[in-house]
Amino acid sequence: MVLAELGQKIGAALQKMSKKTVVGEEEVKELLNEIARALLQADVNISIVKQLQTSIKTEVALTEEAVGMNKRKILQQAVFNAIRKILDPGVKPFVPRKNVPSVVMFVGLQGSGKTTSCTKYAAFFQRKGLKTALVCADTFRAGAYDQLKQNATKAKVRFYGSIVEADPVVIAREGVAELKKEKYDLIIVDTSGRHRQESALFDEMKQVQEAIQPNDIVFVMSATDGQGVHEQAAQFKAKVPVGSVIVTKLDCHAKGGGALSAVAATKSPIIFIGTGEHVEDFELFKPEAFVAKMLGMGDITSLVDTLKDANIDSDSELYKRFQEGQFTLRDMYEHLQNVTKLGSVGKIMEMIPGMAGMSGLAGDHGTAVLKSFIYMLDSMTSAELDDGKVKKLMTPSRMHRIARGSGRSIPEVQNLVVSYTKFEDVVKKIGKMNFKQMTADPGS
Ligand code: GDP
Image (tube, rainbow, N blue to C red; front, side, top):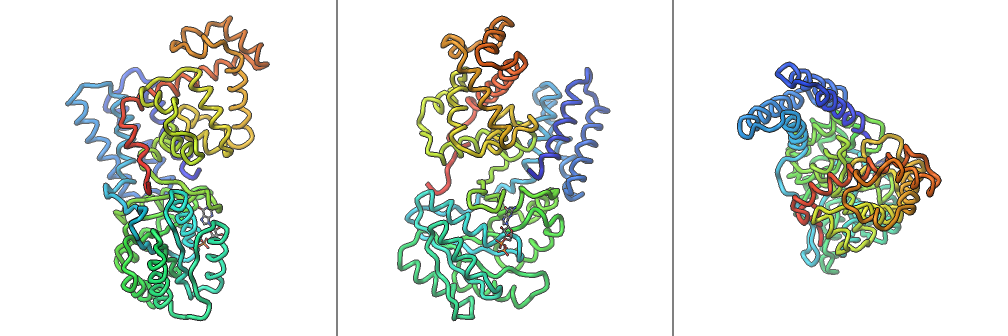
């Protein structure tokens, strides 16, 4: 992922500090400098870097005075909070609901991934049970009609468009009126992609907005556009009331920090991120989970979402145990078996706390590691799987027996125990959080 390198650098800086025996002013300064360097290298806007440094310093000072906690912990939390704050303007986004008719208009630069994101957005809410339709109000780009129609057909979403009408305002108005009559919950209107200086196209966008009075306007921006997108976002926002942002192409080899700093400038929440060309390469954006994943701390909320999407029962014993902060090797065993049902192992691995920072787990290698974990867990006795004190339990002779029984090496068994311990740690923390809120499900 695009920000993986940034996350690794910040993680390394925090790790370096945690190895020091004393954490004084010098060490904090050094950490802040390393973080600033990493952010600038990832193309994050300089004023945002400064803002971040200040907010880390303030939070550290305040927390230290208030509770006298371990300085390393405070710093780690302050770094996490400061990055999260940049990505979270504190505004609640519009969420389409079943049986509440709404119109959402998509705007953005040409090539940003707007049309693709419209379809992904439609498919997402259709999966949530909303009656969803797409309107093509792009009469500017040849092929826009065919592209959206094909996408809609593939995703089995109702499509409205016209090859004879040349006025996008007429198409948008008539399309929305007809689909409202047909009782659609969510009507998504795709507009022409703008270029920078096309004032006529900007006026047209305004006219479409006035004609259809959307409940939300989604601005689509590409992570590959860098810091330049800041000015464009401001131009769009000045013309129409942009309410939400989708950042696309976060799977591409761009630095990503530029686009993310531009989002901060829009003061609108990011609602989804695009991580590929296919309709399923679309993730609900939750700043906390995103930053946790970026910093290699795992992303349990996305994991839960993915499991829910795969129709794995969210009332299951496993979820209840998560809520209670309980986690044994048997839970890990069941969890891994669920995960392997889901296919895309690379993405799933990034979401599993403790495994997010492990390199080279994408694709086939990731599948192989997961399977090796399952074989090793298969070789354990019921007592071992159900015992809560795994570290104590895993004596060298036990590990030897498990390695032999599963045809794996002792370091592999040790690796399994380390992964389990990290996972258990996070599950315990999750147990203390508001689990319902963390996994709040839009559109249901
Ligand atoms: P529009 O001009 O803004 O409507 O852009 P399109 O939706 O036609 O997308 C432009 C190109 O970007 C197409 O080739 C898409 O397949 C591709 N694209 C869109 N979103 C993503 C994404 O999240 N990741 C990647 N890798 N490609 C994307």
